Image (cartoon, rainbow, N blue to C red; front, side):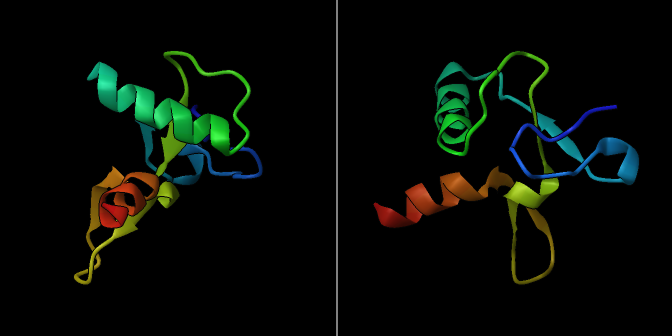
Length: 77
């Protein structure tokens, strides 16, 4: 069972939350890692996961495949 890597997020896959691994694309993976460190993740490896709560939901209730932190970066530009 996987846990979300973000401190104080108690989401677990066994509780029905979807977990996402770091992207395979090196550039995107580095962006994820920067975010994770910014939010207090101390150890990041190939087993690190983010839960679905850190991804945006569109106006139709569909969860995005783009994490919230990346949406914020895109909107700033």
